[in-house]
Length: 270
Image 1 (cartoon, one colour):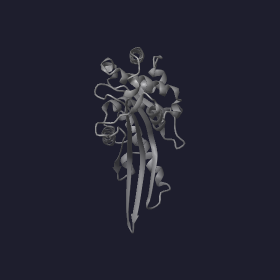
Image 2: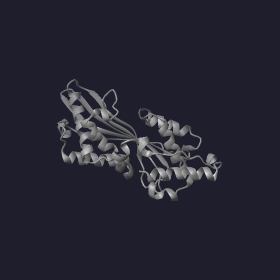
Image 3: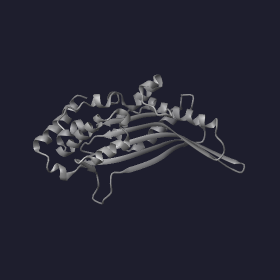
Image 4: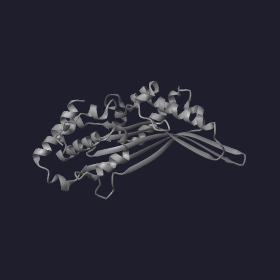
């Protein structure tokens, strides 16, 4: 745990640029980002530091300790392997970390889905210049879905980045129309990103996020009446983690201090 941690080296450009700006880079040079076989944009893991820099010395040292551990676990994986499922599995298997559970037995395992529905592909402006009102609506939609302002801020999803998501969704939906038949549903990933949300006083746990946006076209025809829905589908998965008390009870003060020092050094280098 005392090993040097370098967030810029571990996470790459996403630390300084954020996902939104990397998406803009992608439109200029697709080779700069990892893309799936379906050409959706995939950024395996991005950090969200919240107020950790200000709060780190006020947090329980075991909590700061699992910051060091989780960061080291990420460093061991190639970027392409840093999926939500892989990271969740690795953290749950670590003897110093466990899933967060509240006093009523509810876990921090959370999933939410919502949709920004439009009746026409033109609402998404597939020519790459979406209406500013639609972009604002999409930004609000995303913020409500994620519910964590620090995560939204760290992703750097500004109007320009969200315009890219909306435009790409519109282009995808329009492509569906070339082969669409009645009573069909088609969905395609536009963006998927994982986020490691570091703790602070307001959020005293490590949180792992997956944020996913898909373009959807849903066509239904009943006798002579046809209905078409085109929409941006958003999904978020969250898993909360905390220190495993039984393990940390046996961790020496010296080792705890070294772990805290490594995290402070990482934050000072940002």
